[in-house]
Every structure is written in C-alpha cells, then in structure tokens.
Length: 211
Image 1: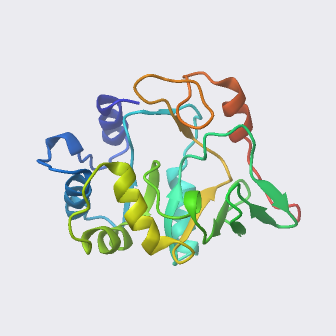
Image 2: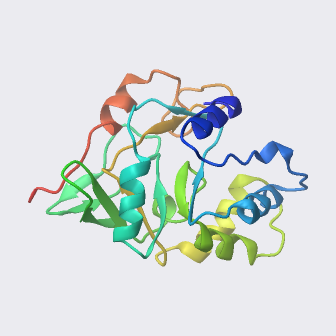
C-alpha cells in the first residue's frame, strides 16, 4: 500500500489523511511529533507505505468498540511479527512469541480483543496500528529530539511503554505485512506480496476455548 493508496482508503472512509512527506524534518522524531500535533481525533490510524494489506476486513469498527470496552488500551496492532507461527492459546489466555500474556475481551459474536502488557511486539511499535491519540502525544512529544530513524524512536519510546501500557491485537490476526522497498524474503524482515504461508497463518481468528 503506497501513499496514494493510503490517501484513497482514507478518503473513501471519511478519515483525515496526514501525509508525513510534507513535513520538514531533521530526524524521524520530527515527523512523528508533527503527525501527533495534527491529530485532533480521539484515535489515530498509523499506516506506512511499505505494508501490504492482504486481508479484506473491516477492522476499524470492532477496533473502536474495543477501545471503548478497554479504556486503558493505548495501541491496537494491525500487524504481527514476521514469522510463520501463530500465538499460542493457553486456556483462555493468549501467549505471544515474546512471552506476553494477553487476555480476551469479547467485542461481539465475531470479534475478540486480545490485550495485555509486555515488551517487544507488545510494547510501543511503529507497526501499522490504531493509537489512543492523547497517550501517543504524551509519550512521543515529551521527549527532546530523538535522533535517527524509526528504529531509534521505537527503541526510546518502548522503554516508556514496556510492561506498563496496555496494547493488543484484534482476533490475534495480522491484516497486513511488511514488504519493504525490495520485498526480500522473510521471516525476520520483509515478505513478498502473496506470501501464502504467512497469510494462511495470520488470517485465522483465535477465539477463547470457552466461547
């Protein structure tokens, strides 16, 4: 999904599109500060042009419902790690690849939110996500300039979020994956468009056994 496609998706759904390429910057932190400053809604959808959305699904509606059901939720991921194995269901909890334990919040008969606190992929991440805007502004903007690119920003902010801020996934699914500029074969970095193994693994919904 490239920037023009992202704009089209936003326009079709009545979302306000903020393009990072129009922002003067010396580092990525400048870009993210400016994006946060321009966000005026309660929630903001963060997308990147090098992610491929392969799974046709209205994730926005159940995601917003989940934010209302879980007032402490700060980030809902739309992507999962670039690996070919899913999270593990243990009883009615979900254990991620980083060892975080996520608890189920029933949204409706078809959707469940898996939320918890952790590190790595369950801490602050620049994966495509829906953020609670005020939390994002507070944690990103209170830092002085963080030099470098997205990786450096993620490393600094994640220290504020580790095991503290509530994050989660919708249905334990990934709606997109990272293809990068070169589409290098994963796991561990980028995938090529049409990676049927990844899509098969991460398109499956995970619901608690008790449902």
